[in-house]
Amino acid sequence: MNDIVWVVNERDAGEYERDDHPMCVYPKEWSLAYAQKHWMLASPPNPGFLGAFPGREWACLDAERRGCWGVLQLDDNITTLTFPRGNSKSCREIVNRNGGLAMFADILSAVALSTNGRMVGANLGAMPSIKLGIARPGFPYSCFIEKVGSGRESWYGPYEDDITHAFQYGTRADAGSSTALVVPLLRYEKESKSKSAMRSYYDHTRAVSLQKIFPEAANIVIKQRYSNGMGAPRIYHQMRSDAIRNKLIIKDRAMFRQVKTRIEQLLIDWWELHQGLVREKITRRSVRVVNPDTDNAAL
Image (cartoon, rainbow, N blue to C red; front, side, top):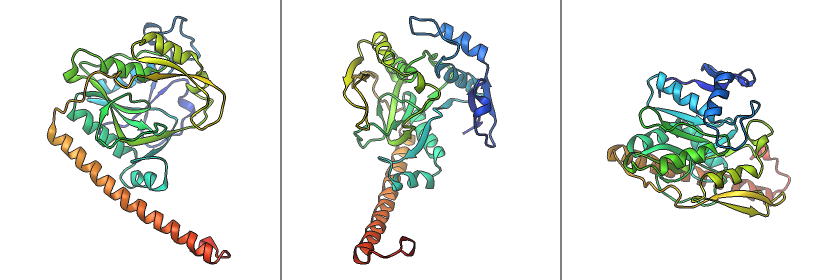
């Protein structure tokens, strides 16, 4: 990993919590000019809302200026990184013990460098099914590595920019050197509700716009509830399972084998940790059943 910088909009830079790493701030004027040339809606850009895609493009340009081979594209509303499933204590703790975000960056980078994946990301925690495997063709969303330099696609927006970007890489004619991949056991959770950034502008038009752009891959569906079981009926987009046509191709088998070994060891470590936490929970509950007056702090 080379330079660590946080790419943020000039408009929002003053509101971010700072750490030891510098900010790379992109100007509002440049953002609007770029959006006007890469806008995919019929209505013109609203200077008050341009979406995330100008920032993603700036991050790629800055990585190229610095001589990097790739960039970590990261949304600012991710709350938790987990492995290999759900949001339990053991799934969070195994990530924390192995470097947190650095662990994600290492594994995603290794998959990107050893395959034809130009865009390689973690799996959204809300995805219901988990299939064991190192990587598969799919749509990375909020946490992914993108290769920069020759062969990189420009970013378009404003809605579902990550989906359309993955579609660009996943359907190109140069299948041997381009696709979009997901590492299913690397998972993340996002804010359940947010009034900032993109989410405050989300409505049914995002699904309709995506379906207009990619009618062969995106369907419009009406669901009766939100994913948490509450709320009113709402229009969603649903991507075809074969929308990413370009298959995974391993180009560096030695490196890909190292990724496989790393993930297998993480699974072993997680299972041991999970079993230990389960035993502790059973012990605490058993003591309370036998002696209900027992203080939890004494267990």
